Image (cartoon, rainbow, N blue to C red; front, side, top):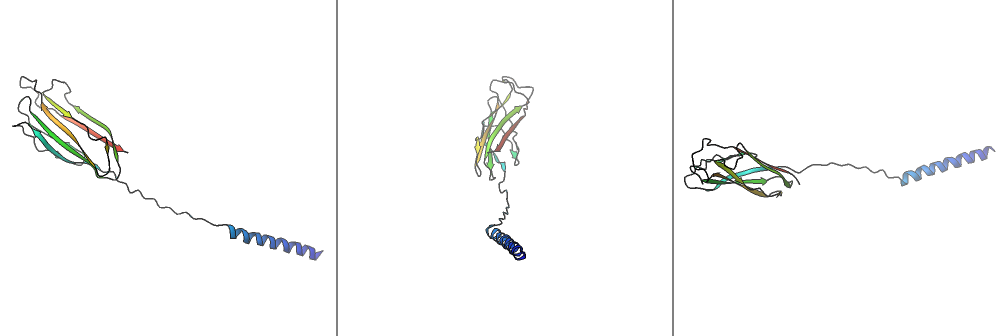
Length: 164
């Protein structure tokens, strides 16, 4: 009887040992290591402001610009005078962009204003490495028959791109 118990216990021990060795043989421990890096860059900016056209005698001023702002200050002499500027916007980043909003507001929106601004819109999609332009014409209203009391006008423009 003692031998039977011993044989049973020894058999159970060998079975458990065999199962443990078998389990460890068929079990594989997997390790996953990950490093993620964001390499995209967002860099849309104004790269130039150039006078394209003007009426003889108009002073286009010296356009000024930074990466995100452009300032033009032309001097117009008589009704019908105009100065046209081309503003270049470039996507120097690696992320494509979509035009979200173009908004121009003025301190005088009336159609009889002595000074009018006429603008177009830049391209709707601005791919990485590409550029687009926007034209802005400043016009002395040709329907004005007298020298106006208000001789200046401010316009503020906002061109907003978002990630594609």
